[in-house]
Image (cartoon, rainbow, N blue to C red; front, top):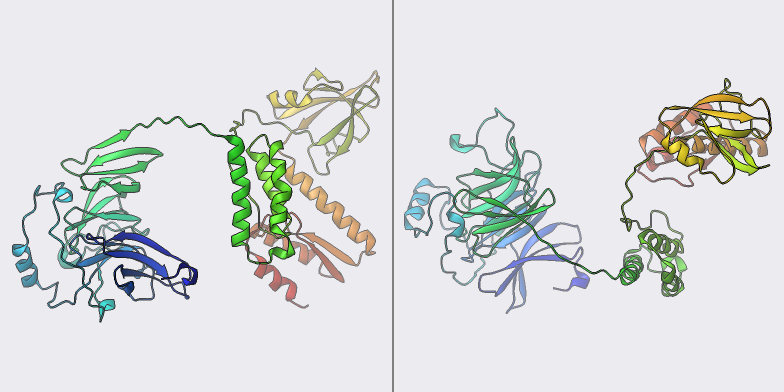
Length: 499
């Protein structure tokens, strides 16, 4: 088994009880995932699922006779069990079941809540009869039917599988006669139990059980729920206890930032689609940017530094982002007036009014070059932080006192309906300026459109623009600063059409 030649790699999920066999899942060249057993002594592997669906998460039973695994061959992730030895009789025959039940030794604990702690039978050496093993797998769970639907086989309760979501994790009881698994039904997410023979399905308790991890003796399980760590006893009443953990950690931020930059470099080196790195000396790029780490003062700085380094590749859809050094709560929402101010003649002067913005209204009559003397009743002069006034303004409409000159004896007051953001307004003005430039330079023959993102609203806007400019001789399609998405095929289909 050579990792370098194994498409998709492989994932080890366990060992046999005598530690002589490994169980793992791996993909083939067609990305089909099967479950394999590997004989450590003989260095030979055996495919024990052999089908075109995704099989994974396998466990060898303590007696070394069966393998339990998850598979999506029924449409969602469900539990299956396969016998490693050739079946000599029908496991569903009632007479066979009754005989095996009487012959089975009675474990300790007994009853519901006690089976997880029973001891397993002594293990025999693991043997595989591989001929026909692909036909031996038995499905143990199914998606739960809707409320009011029909029950399972023979009038039994329907399988306590996932109501449309499948099984996320499972583990075996100590005696391997019961399988506990996390799934959903009409009551929601919870922990369920089912016999390894596919009988006695039941809901154990409610909960999401993220990261479900049992103790070796199966008397307790640990899991995460709502971000907290819990333990639950697997005997009696399944009592749950929240576990409080306090850990003091000292973080060397400069070492951490150096590690972040190094990992960004390594990810691109080993995962970038072009092994020649677009002709960039990638080792030299690292050597260029690493010395700049001494100027980093917070997480965002190292993200910016890493993005500058990655930008050397000149490739789209690449970059890094992450959590800030310190979360800054949004305590204020600034109100925007829709114009820019500069200092001039000892006062603030309007240098730009955004088209179709809150200040660009005919009833206001504002003009670029006018002076702003007061905002929301507060006089303002160069050096004053007028954004603080806009942060604290209570009303949506903000009064602004303007005049033709700083010393104008007759200033006038206008009421501007503010907006929370100028992002869209600035974007539309930028598009208009580009369109006007293309129209002027081409003498009105070429149209201009900008695709803001590869999403459905942008597709609808593009179609509207195409309808508006259908009679132009050509079109400039600008995708700078595009946020990404997946409408490229629809766009090409539109552009490829002829009148």
